[in-house]
Each structure stands twice: as structure tokens, then as C-alpha cells.
Length: 227
Image (cartoon, rainbow, N blue to C red; front, side):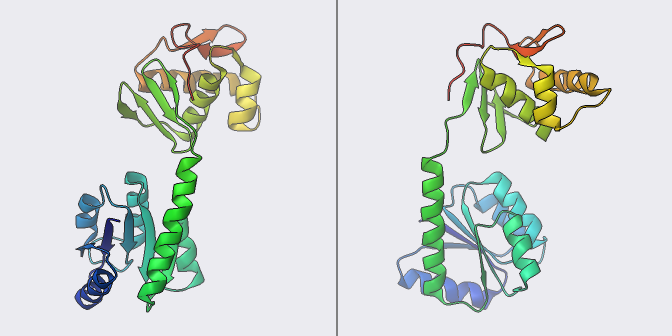
């Protein structure tokens, strides 16, 4: 288990590293948010103190969540209900208030890892069509192996069209499911989003317009969509 501690208090960091070493856990320890972003790659668990000298702890939690699959446990003296809610909403898997018992900390870490292992085991395979891959739960898209940044609605639109695997997605259905309502300019808004999607993917022929009806995957991609 590769554990990263982000803690600027020297006494707390040294004491925790010693206590975990006695329990057979090797701890990597950094004191700033900038160091943490570089060290987090490949970690199994991140122990995050919120009171850091260079960054806002909640912002760092969000950045770590976006950039790593590691379990994140906040360990902080900030123990109000609001702080816990913000911490968990920022991507933390658990929140432990200082002072805490080291054995309880380890028990929580192991519980988080068990939950995440179960979640990963049941995670569906990405959608793949051509050289485009869509990780639906992770809200990630890759084209030719390169990450593509999509808005939420662009992502939903792509998933709908990809999941249909060559069948036509009707305009009315797309608008109802992606926007949740219709309005006089809805068709134009849909067309604009499809245009953005084609541009961002860099594959203008991937999504075919069926005039007056809707959109579908190209014949080259359809029939090869895999989960």
C-alpha cells in the first residue's frame, strides 16, 4: 500500500510516519500542495490535511480527485459539519478529524480501499468506436489516445449517439434526455453542440447527420462499439 501524507506540521508528520512504520505501512510525506500534485501519481491512498501553506485544501482535494484514482482521506482539525460536507463533496472518500487514533485511521483507509475495489470490479468497460474511447463513469474521452475535454452536455450527447451503435438518435429524444426540456431554439442548440463535438474530437465524419431526423455514428464506427 503506497500512502502519501500531505501535512505541513513537522511534528504531526513525523509522529504519523513513525506510527505507521511500526504497523508495516511505508509513508511518503510532503508538506505543500504543489509537492503533493507531483507525488500523488501511483499512490493508493492520500492522507490530506486541509491547512496547507500554499493552496486551499479543498481545491487541492478536487485537483487530486481529477488527476488520480487514489483513495483520499481528509485528516484535519477542521471538524465542523460544513467542512466535512465540503471535503466529501470535493472528492474525499472519508473525513477524519484530528486528533485521531492511528488504528482507526488505518481501519478507515482499509474500508475505503475495499469499497473502491468493489466499485472498480463492477465498473463497466469503456465504449469504443474507431479510435475513440469513452469512460462513462469516469466522464473521460480519448481520441487516438489523447484526452478530450468535453462539456457535460457534449459528453451526454456523445454517449447517447455511441451507445446507439449506428442506430439513429432522434432529435426529440436527445433534447429531452440531455436538456430535459424543449424550446423554440432547441434544434439549433443541438446542432451547435454536435458541431462543437465534431471539432473537439477532430473527427468530423464520425457523427452523421440524418436530415430531419437526428444523428448516428458513421458506418465505419458503427457495429464496432464495445463495452
